Length: 474
Image 1 (cartoon, rainbow, N blue to C red):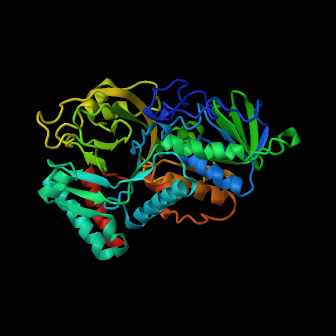
Image 2 (cartoon, helix red, strand yellow):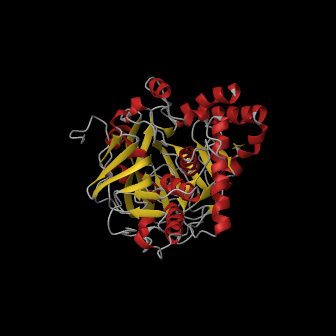
Image 3 (spheres, rainbow, N blue to C red):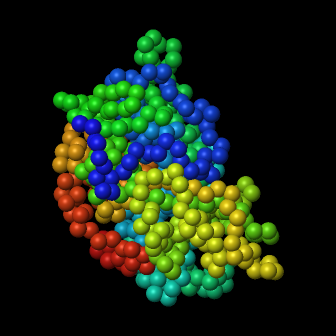
């Protein structure tokens, strides 16, 4: 049946128009408006809904496993959170070792090394650069909690000991460009990257693998249909019918790589994956700036979490976050066709007193920077803080053949590619394959029931303190 009225909190379809992302200023000509076949196929082995990093790496796994894949996207390819840097990466891949359960930290590291090696082996032109990340800690309480976590990691998880380095020496903090911080934790294994270009490269290679010489499109193994939203799903025997404005597609298997938009197709997951709008600005560096050596994240006094990279070409500063107070409440939406003026203003002033962009220069730091791009994107915030991966239970609107990999809570870059690959491997009947998927990520009816009672940390300091328990328990 067609969904007529959305539940409170349920995602809308992606808006036809969206704010203009910095990461889209050089789009792939091959992918813009792409439709592999003029007509929408009436059937497929597998339908993948969503063409971000999850759907793309899942499709790669499925095609290599012998499946014919039809990929649908409501807008252009990779035009959602991955292509917007609105998930809390802003263009970086950063495993959060000291505030993540140790086995999940290892999964994020595995994901990081997989992506690094994939980019290197294939010479993917996506500006991947391993630079390490600095987590600035503004208060004594946060600093001491982080120090204890790093100590516990060294004691209980020696394989992670060199992956999180506590720094509180004032000279060292100044070298890290955070002289006003009380302390910092450095993660050596972190990179900055152009996410859209990474995904676009994979999609282009999948399309070029099609054999166009065979009659009746028999040689097409990967069919990409942009500007074709999946409006709802229907179970029909042992198959699924995916409805779109251009017609219906029947498939034995469907993968929802829809992140923040998931509840539009699965209304029963409305409370489990909440659409949340993130906002990012591309800021012009001040005159006389010295390039940053690392990526950065930090918590703000009002409870927001900010994240920053600096581009090598022109020094543009990609800053996201500043979602706190009433602005946080306004961010509970699935619309990315507008920006929030309050957050725009906060981001333009967000680096003052946090990072030193002009060390040793007369005149000090600028109070406010000029923005060349300001945009939004939709993240999927999970009710229990973990992604949802696997075959969707009937109680949540699924059943045999319907799979999901979504709900990264703004932390998709160190998790999404391997989570998508794990879901694809399940669809191929191989379990999670080579991916060591954390048990917390596996979707189940029992997990959904427990998630409704979950209490999540609300600040960076709370996250640090909560993780001390898991470091010792595991």
